[in-house]
Amino acid sequence: MKALLLLLSLSLFAINPSDAVENDRVERNLKSLQNFLGWDPGVFIIETKHVENAVATQAAILVNPDWIENLSDQEIMAVVAHELAHVKHRHLAERLAIYADGFVNAIFDFKNEMGFSERFSGFRSYFSTTQEISADCTAYNWLSDMRAKGYAVDEKALASVFKKSTPFIEDFESYGLENEPVYVRYKKIMKGHPHECH
Image (cartoon, rainbow, N blue to C red; front, side, top):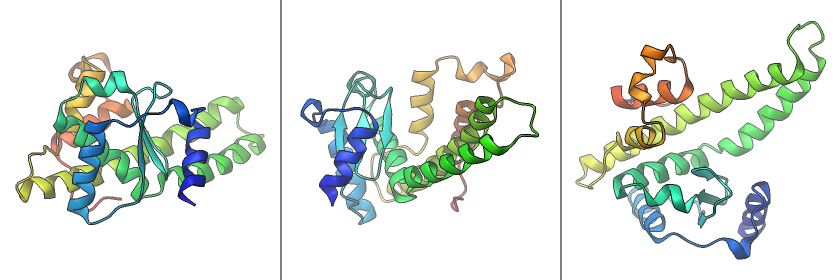
């Protein structure tokens, strides 16, 4: 079953399994997090340039080697925690079901003056952002709990990943971009997520 899930995960991103390699730094952080949580979902870590940064499916966490190389161990742990949170919440399956429903609704929404792609894009964006914030919150709490137990982790490290990927993120408000999803996520992490995530 795991092999089938892995093949499905790879096919979603047009990855040839023979091209994929493991990343030791990411794998080490995944094992540490799994040991702390007492939970092993059986995901594989796969390094591939077919993703921009990191993406989780139910069977694998795919990471871009060029992107991950520029992250500290604390930042890698934050990324792994975020992606593992997607796995825990089964976000990919939920997202696919929501997209299918949104696609059908967008097709049959004849009274709406917006074009199909606009309607579907807005629908998709809302649920994607909701899932990202949920994964951020779960990861934040896992890392906060780990730090409280003496692990060398930082629950706000994902915010520094955002700063590396978007160097002017702290200036978003001055550009009128305060509602951009990445900025909303950044501010929530910097403020601190509640212990209960939705």
